[in-house]
Length: 460
Image (cartoon, rainbow, N blue to C red; front, side):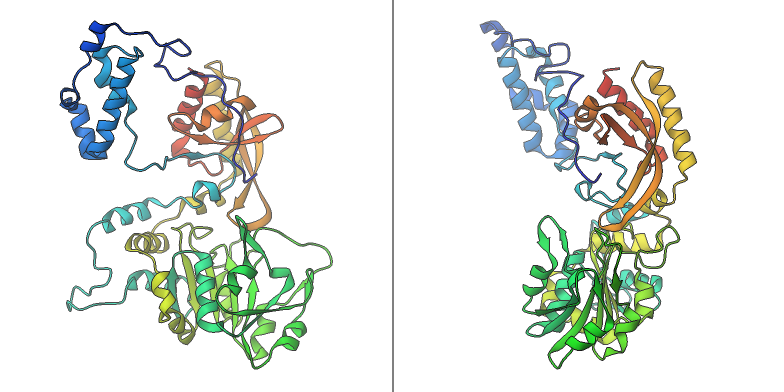
């Protein structure tokens, strides 16, 4: 389900011409028409383009004007329409990233940037965009610890953590732990937890790159505390427990718990992956930071942009001396996060609920009512759509095997590309010859935008 739909676009306009001229051969303008094409400086005096230059930059606006003039030279538009065409060609923003509606049914879709930030986190990012007191104590006027309020908020959410540190992603958290604690030494890890974390990156390769050596114990499906104990020696830096977050092994299995490993005499480092800070009633098998620290882990690493619902970052929580060793290592400087991430993380921790939390807790009956209302509205426009039951997943390497009952709009499969490439991009999934727009990860406030995108794709 966590894949990009690739159906070829059909419906809507074709070709590169202006609306109403799709597929027509460009007209050859005469000499008089070319003379009527306005000069660049004249077009740039258009108030709409002057405002756009302030918002997007002069170069982006000039590029749009030049492309509009070229279309006029080719006869695709009238010379008098150059300014209007340039306005239409302007990018939405100065960034190439486009906001999309995630209707895949995957709450934390990696290709779509995983967690959507809460309104509080977005406001915090805007406020932190200018000068901030990120490393300054305004009361004393002297340098202060970077991100101190965000770290305090993180410790408050995980009471068993004596200290906390933040780096730029979950893999970086594990790399910092291995480098600072185990370079030139051994890490004892179960064979069943030697996972690939995505896009070809494998945990063993990541850990070996730090200068540590891996000591594999147990088997793929069964590893006991005795297996770890037999491998621990003077060169052991720590025991590593990794949650296999993107797959499940069922049947004849055994995995040693943190509480069994903590008394073995070496630190236990636990990579929980998904960023769950405390137990969640809907995800009873998903590991959380608080429980693992209470069980005796010296350090827990996790991602901030997964079930926590915050920005991309790596969380390190644990004993004070362990976290201090990591935070003072030279590599910590290279992996540190910026002020925008710190602001978004703190607002995620202290503010109201996140979109991820809301999607996880969504009521299936309410989702079906939304789907039925939207289907009725769109069906009245003559669109081939119906409301159907659906199954969503957490995604982002969280809660493998867990499905969440949901509801979706079912449309013809051929609409998938038109929806992706419309003015408001909508990404759904293909299933049984239909394009499903699953509503679990779509906030209710976006229902009208979603309906508008469907109408646009239908040419209504």
